Amino acid sequence: MKLLLDNNIEDLKQICAELGEKQYRAKQLFKWISQGANYGAMSDIPKSFQNKLANEYFDSALKIVRTLTSKDGTQKFLYEFKDGQTVEGVLMKQSYGNTLCVSTQVGCAMKCVFCASGYHGLVRNLTAGEIYGQVIVANSIAKISNIVLMGSGEPLDNYDNTLKAISLMTDENGLNLSKRSISLSTCGLPEKIKQLADDEAGVVLSISLHATTDETRQELMPIAKKHTLKELIDATKYYFEKSGRRVVFEYLLIKDVNTNHFDIQRIQKISKQVMCHFNLIMLNSTSTSLLKSLNTREAERFLEKLKPLGVSATIRKSAGSDIEGACGQLRTKFAGRKTNKN
Ligand code: SAH
Image 1 (cartoon, rainbow, N blue to C red):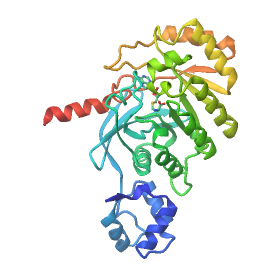
Image 2 (spheres, protein in one colour):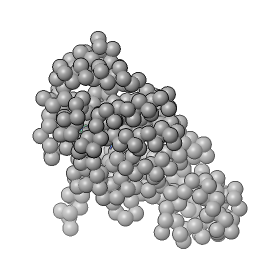
Image 3 (cartoon, rainbow, N blue to C red):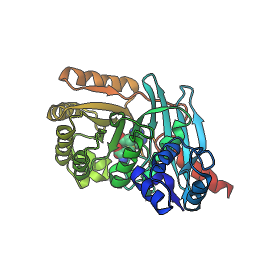
Image 4 (tube, rainbow, N blue to C red):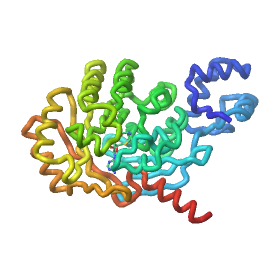
């Protein structure tokens, strides 16, 4: 069985042709699946066609098997795909609209030391429909206006499916999200960043920088052994020049690792090389790493030192801190519980 959601309107036209149906059905179908409708509810599509489709295609990609709701309204979901694999999603409610954090892979191959998603390595890529499906399911709970591709996985390591998912999210016949409201976060694959610029993806590019020297970055992120900071910043510049979009550097504030006086100077240097904003992030502790976050006061002091240097920077607001399961931990917990039961 395949997923109907893996198909854009062009693909759906092809399916219509194969099943002997009219081409205009493709748009109707796309509208329905984008609303999360199941077979049986697609009222302007003949039952006979729906039955033919149901023999070959699932009408959904995933279901929510756990939900945690925070006092501040943030919701964390655990989604389960047809093969039983799971990933997490986070729905954040803000005054300017609701933001959904979306995953692109089950697990991750990048193995950053501070991140729970890569702890067991990569399990598999998500298909375009499995990525898009997360947005559809969440959108039926609360209208989603912003997407951050910051869940589990490295989006640029699953390039084609991620790009197709973006085009599904932004299709005017479906959810019609704007490209500018989609942020793609990457650990930094320079060639793929340039390809993203050439493909005119149009999304906001977020780079997980997390260090100002190759040496420190290599300690935190194995990918830095393959690509230097210079290569990464050059690719980021290329993305800015091609897209005209300011890039975002994500920077974890880790005690005694990347937050000294010299880091501040080097952040200033980087900020002069490319139009950018620094998103300073408090580290969520994971069971597998001993790294410690700066506390709130230290983080504010760090920010205050950057400001007079002309660096555009903010501390990322944390949401849902009372519902644990940050950064891959809900999935790990759920997997543990499942095993305990068996
Ligand atoms: N692979 C992509 C996107 C997924 S991670 C990337 O590396 O950017 C999304 C963001 O969460 C990244 O900035 C990542 O560095 C950050 N992150 C991972 N583990 C974290 C932790 N324990 N605490 C805070 N942020 C974390």
